[in-house]
Length: 154
Image 1 (tube, helix red, strand yellow):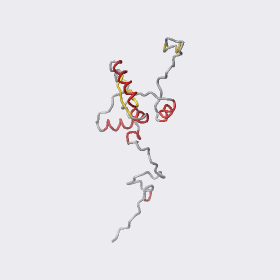
Image 2 (cartoon, helix red, strand yellow):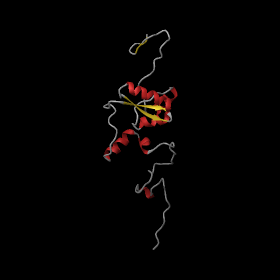
Image 3 (cartoon, one colour):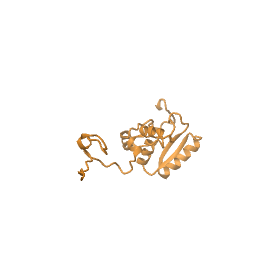
Image 4 (cartoon, helix red, strand yellow):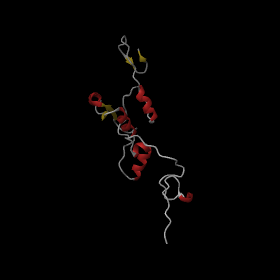
């Protein structure tokens, strides 16, 4: 006897059996992800942390209990500033370095860094990635010698 060959159906299971599926029956197509997207970035930090804990791998501690903040610096100039800041903070600030702002955002999403300095355009992009601003600069007026953070420019 000869077995009947079935054609490969990527998006529809035979007889709606729901078995041996690569994709759900509800899938209608595929889209290409951005080049640097890996599984951890795609699934997000919470899901990835859950998987890591199931595998009993070491994962980053709760950011609310860490004693230092990892600042992501873009490029050599920001790296130098960060190292000076780190030394002056007695280790309260640590430095991570990336080549681009997008690479820093990825480090933050993956919990390899905690914070970054951004301009307005990148703040919008960061917001689309689920990140939120926590500080803003208050520019000092030339006539003002002192700024009280609670009151703003005096």
